[in-house]
Image (cartoon, rainbow, N blue to C red):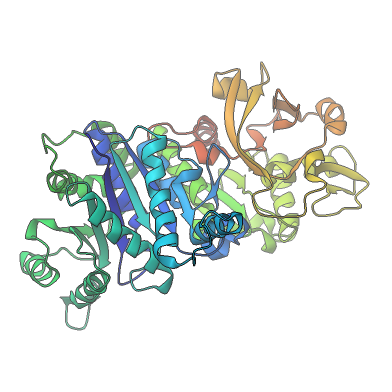
Length: 538
């Protein structure tokens, strides 16, 4: 293709309809036809990135290989298309304004009045186009966060309008995702909200090319014709997106609706034959028809919002499929766990995962969970803070260091088995200052993890500030908890495991960020296998 093709995905009527899943599904379908595709998310909030946001506020903060703290939708992008995203794949209003203000302070605008149009919209367009110049992609799919009609979204909508005008209709396309609500009292699907949403787009100068209608019930031809007529879209470009049992069915559903074929035709590209999507179909079949079931406890302090641990939950879907197993996650609020009730919380579980997090709220519940798993010989997987909790628990109850703790929770602890990294001690600004992105890890020969990975060096993503204190490493090793992975450059401990245990591994990194449909993470795969073995004795 001579020119890059730009596809914009907007949302109307309500938020959280699944723009990210539709974007990722379309990307997967185009990729399966042999095209190269990347996806970016433009977020209208003024935070520079989600790094300082509470998970209750915005779900998990996803981390890219190059160390960007980004929106969780980038996790969906990577899980679907199996290609790493970068700093450029997530842009916020905060970052846009920060860049424009920095340029103004340097005098780049030569004394002109800095305005939303053209300066903010030009910066938005530059951020959209930068992916096309940085990578060799045929398609750049851009998801606009929020809902059409939001004040925050207006500069992005205007930037899209300008790009459509600049690039022309065969190089730029808009897909609008809306909700068609069902009124049970009259047993009707109502299209009026969609009509109003499209009208709002038209008022801002954008005619959507394709409408994707989210619905609980099938759309008949009359509804599609009505939407097509009132929204000025051709009938075949009205796409049904009905609720499904797993998000991984959406690409197959969109293929059935011929979304990718319609997009290619509108962008003046040959439609060709529909790809088979055989590996994807096999994966979905395994997810929907498991032969085994296990229950895994997910201990965290943000469990009330499932999106807080989205990547971990999806990693268990991927690993479960490899093992022909459905992993039922039992979410447990760590604040509620104490010595008197812990048995009731973990009754019948086949494995325990202690999730990442920051701060001391709920920390003792996480430490008790690690102790329970260790003493009851239940497969245990500690991720980031989860690994640190396992280290603290082992220090207190096996090494006899009663007051052992992390200096994050207790700055005066006499036994700082988890301590602040040296380069972090002078850092006071919170945003983007942690150990972020991908780092090497040398796997210890003969360890459990060496068998799991079958590699001597792996690359894993990080997001943390505190580390295992190497001054205690020898003492741990003598008492049965050993280092199984280490950073070759800094000698920071990456993995701790207990060889004498059924399955007990704590990792300082975030393996969930690396797990995709086509490449499930080996640690999750082996943990699920161990949980299945543990369930056979129930």
